Length: 410
Image (cartoon, rainbow, N blue to C red):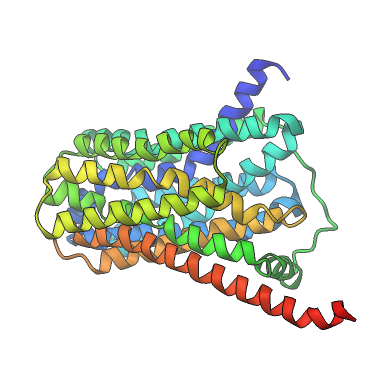
C-alpha cells in the first residue's frame, strides 16, 4: 500500500469515527441560544445530549451484527443517510421535544461510523499494520474535542445555533460521498450469520460470563462517565455562570481536552514499565484525590473561572490512563467474540454517560457543584466497584479450589 493510499484510508476512516464526537461537542457553545429560543433553562437543553448518548449506546449494539451480515458499506450508507436527515431535522426543530427526538435519531445513524471504521481497519490493513492504523485513527479522534467546540462557537456567533447542524449534515454528506467512491468494500456480506435475537444474545451472554470483562467494563465505564458529567454541565458553568463568550468556551474546552490527549499519548511510554492493571489503579486513586480537591474548591469558594479550568485539567489527566487501559483489560480475554465484547463495552459506556448527564442536569442548582461532584463520584464509585469485584472473584476462585481439593487428593 502506497503512502498516499494509506493516508486517504486513514482520513476517511478517521472522519467516520469523528462524526459522533463532533456531534457531541460542536453544539455545546449553542446551549444558551437554544435555551433562549425555546424559553427553557440550559439544564433542560442538556437532555438533548443525554438522548444522543443513549442513541449511541443502542446503535452500537445494532450495527455490529448488521455489518457482519450485510457487509460493511450497505449499513454504513443507511446509517449516514439517517444521520444527515436527522441533522437537518435538528436544525429545523421547533421545540425542545423535537430536538431531543432528532438528536436520538442522529445518534442512531451517526454511531455506524464508529463501529464500521473499526471493522474496516481489520479488513483493509495487514496484521502488522493494524495497530499503527488504529493509532493514527485515534489521533484523528483525539483532535476532535479540541476543535469541535471552538468551531461550533464561531458558527453559533456568526450564523446561529441552527447552522451547527447544517454544517454537520454537509460534512457528513461529503464523508458519505468519499465512502462511496473511495473506500473499498472490506469484508463481504455473510448470509450464514444469523440476525436472530437468540443468536446475538447468546454471543453477548458468553462475553458477560467473563469475570475480567465484567470487572473492567463496569469500573472503567463508570470512571469514563466523568467526562460526560463535565460535558453535560460545562456550557452552563462557563457560559452562564462565568459569562465566558462562545469562543472562549471553545478554547477552554480544547485546553481541558488536551489533558486527556496528552496523558493518553504518555500512556504508551508508561506501558513499557507498568502493567495496565497498575495504571488503572494509579489513575483512579489520583483522580479520587484530584476530584476531592476540585469539589472542596467549589464548596469553599476557592476557584474563579481560570482556577476551575486548571482543576478540571489536572483531574482529566487521569482519564487518558483509565480509558485505554480499562478497555484493553476488558477486551483482552476475547478472540472469537471480540466484536460482541467491543460493542457491549462501547454501549455500556455511552449508556452510563447518558445516565450521568441526566443526573447532572436534574441536579442543576446554578453552581458548578453538580458538575464537579458528578465527576468525582464517578471515579469514587469506579474504584470501589473495582476493589469489590476483585474481592468477589478471588473469593470464588478460592472456593472452587477448596471444592476441587478432595478430587485432586484422590
